[in-house]
Structure formats: structure tokens, C-alpha cells
Amino acid sequence: MLEYAGSAATPPEYPRWDLPEIAIVGRSNAGKSSLLNTLGGRHDLARVSKTPGRTQRVHFFAERRLGLAVADLPGYGFARASKAEREQFAAAAERYLLERELLRGLVLLLDVRRTPEEDERVIVDLAQSRRLGLVRVATKVDKLGRTERVRRLRELDRAGLGPWLPFSASTREGREAIVEAITELISAS
Ligand code: GDP
Image (cartoon, rainbow, N blue to C red; front, side, top):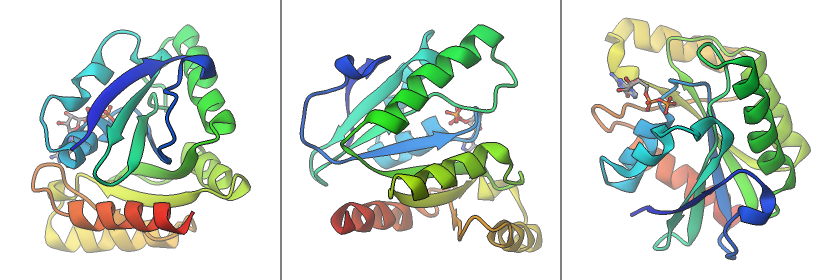
């Protein structure tokens, strides 16, 4: 069960705890809130991250049973954001990704119907340079038929960023595999 633990724009405002953290990253609309709700076992959990100011802040959730915390980063890929919002994203998310010492791993979300682009490569490179664990999640797989789904997942795996776990917030398919991957990442770090 995830518990909301506050939102922060700058490091001094981050929670002062000793829980290892996992950050959820992905473009706007990739399905971050839906994944958080599915992982957290509540429908309203990520509503907070849809409120005004979302783009400027990192939202923190504690998962006490698993002994970890989750940071929901503002979405990148800025189709709907103004220039000022893009700059604020850069400030809030980049500072978190570069400076947070408790950060152990990233969960990178990509809509299964999209192709990884520069935004995704930046995240994969960052995971490597900071030696963070990385779980790649292809979201919304329920939107594809059987054949198309197999084809898209194969293409994603060939894109050179590593293997992707299929996930659907609608059917909850993939939830257990993601929890397992996150738990393994934390125990290995
Ligand atoms: P965020 O901007 O990354 O937090 O993305 P959201 O979780 O808000 O999802 C964006 C849109 O995609 C919403 O309309 C969701 O209902 C929809 N969505 C998210 N995950 C899924 C999924 O697994 N299946 C389907 N069919 N729709 C999804």
C-alpha cells in the first residue's frame, strides 16, 4: 500500500527518511498515475499528482511493507506544456535525478504503441551513469490485439534500450512482475 508523503520542488523539501527510492519516469500520458494507482492498490492515490503544480514538483509515496519509497516525477515530452513549464520540469526532475542520494532505481514507462526517442535514451543513459537499476515498462498493452502486441513488444526489445515488461492498468496484467523487478532492484542495490 502506497502512502502519499508530500511533494517537493527542491532537495531541502524532500522527505527525510532512510527508505531507498524508486522514481517513476515517462512522458506525459505514458500512464504514470495509472501505474501508481495499480501498484498502490487505490484509485485516488495519484490524483494529487494531477493537481496544478504537478509539473514543478516531485511527489513522494512510502511503501512501508516493502521498505521502499516511490517518487513520481513530472512527465517529460512536453506536448502540452508551456516553455516556462518545461523549464520547471527540468529544474524539479533533473535535480531529483541528479542529486537524490536515496535514489536506487528508475521505472521508465513508455506507451507500447510508441517508439523510444531521445527522452527515453536520456533516462537509460542516466541510469547507467548513476549506476541505478532500471525497470522498463511498456504500458497500455490492453489497447493492442494479440498479433500487434507481440510485434510491438518485439520492436521495443530491438530498440536497443533493453527488455520491456508489458503492463496494463486496465487489466492489471504485469503488476506482479513489476513489483518483483522493483523488489529485486532494491535488494541488489
Ligand atoms: P500520466 O500522464 O503518465 O500520469 O498518465 P495517466 O496515468 O494519467 O494516463 C494517461 C491516459 O491513458 C489516461 O486517460 C488513462 O486512463 C490512460 N491509460 C493509462 N494506462 C492505461 C492502460 O493500461 N490501459 C488503457 N486502456 N488506458 C490507460
